[in-house]
Image (cartoon, rainbow, N blue to C red; front, side, top):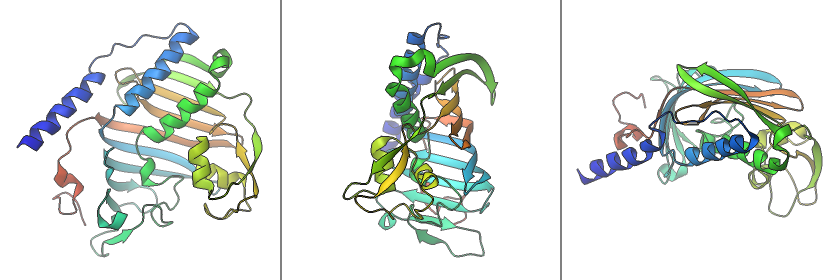
Length: 289
């Protein structure tokens, strides 16, 4: 009982951050900068989320469309996901940090045994640019925020507010960011690095590093002293819709030097609502493990 009360109290505290539509339409670059800062603050305040995730991603020079039902607890990481449309539709995945030897439970249907797989395995991330660890707002939000802060001194050229739009029944602020100096640079791989570690340290997209270096076939297939190509920021441009109530980027469209990268949409979004522990177990009545 105490645990339930504590969970509800925590949810109330964090949900109060998103309680009212008290946004101010940015009239200056300084106010736009404050809006981006508040977006990142609100992203970091997300503790739980439920949403229907619609995404279109460039993968091996094709656009892969998919739709997923997601339940997410940020810390410790707990994820339930069901693939509704796209590759492997019908598959369910359950991951709880610190259990099952760090592996995710994966069920492809009632006639196929449930198996345990690493979240980083090629099967789990098949036809996807990212792993399940990057689900939610924090990963892309951090990349967007890093790119903005790098070019904050040129904010007039880099970012602009483009008005209000309606998305998924929400009033949203349309923000466009473009790195007009976007280019590829040479980078020498250091001891102990792979493409994922390089991407994390430099705030880049790891799959993009594979795309920019076609001779490299896997994230770990680089050696110290090897020279690779990396972009100066994770994307050339980003179009975002910030929900006026939460200031979360519920729509994101990402472009790089090769054109369209990805489009991410958060539908039926619920933030910081209590999610019962049993909803992150394979025995939960609505799941098919």
